Structure formats: C-alpha cells, structure tokens
Image (cartoon, rainbow, N blue to C red; front, top):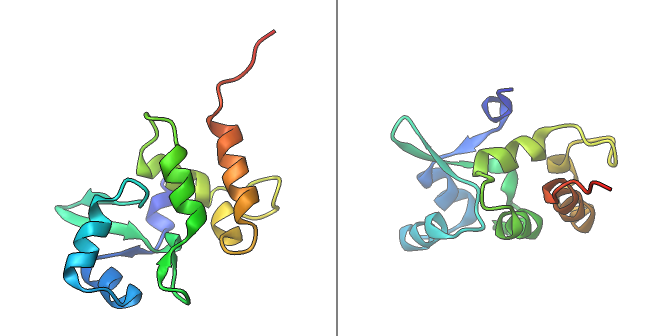
Length: 118
C-alpha cells in the first residue's frame, strides 16, 4: 500500500516557485494544519495534488478534509484516501479536485465517521 510513492511530491523550493510565494509564505504554509506534508529523509515534502497551479492556492477541498479529519488520521492517511479509486466517482478523489469538491469532502466525512451498529 505505497500510494504515496506514486504521488508527485514537491520540495519547499518547488512549492515556493509553483505557488509564486516567498520563503516566509512557504514557512507559514508548512505550519498550517490544513496542508498535507511530511518529512522524508530529513526533507519536507508536500504532495503536489493538493495544489491548484492555475489559481496558485491549496485546493479548498484538501484544506477542508485536513481541517475535519479525525485526530488519528495523518497526512499519509489522507493522501492514501485521495489516491484510491472511489466507487462514487469512478476515479480517485484526487482526480476530482476542482471538479467535484463538495462530493470529495463528503466522501471523506463519510469515511471518517464511526460505523453505526444496531
């Protein structure tokens, strides 16, 4: 289950250049709870799929998912969910970012709810 290995990852410098930010803005981005990121080999990485390069921003849907994820869900858990084929979409949620944001967020909300037992 190495979905994150397939995800394009961006370094600090790449995020700065892609988003048109200065270093202090990327530093603030690093500290936000609504941004997917992790350390790998001592290097901070950001999954590229969460960025909207046309609007130079973090996709609102990924921010919403990260803000409302269960406390035990890591960035990696969210990334795996974004990259798995979802039966509701017939595609991965990552492929639907910018097209069906409300549906992507709703799918994550359903997945994070504890199961109901009668």
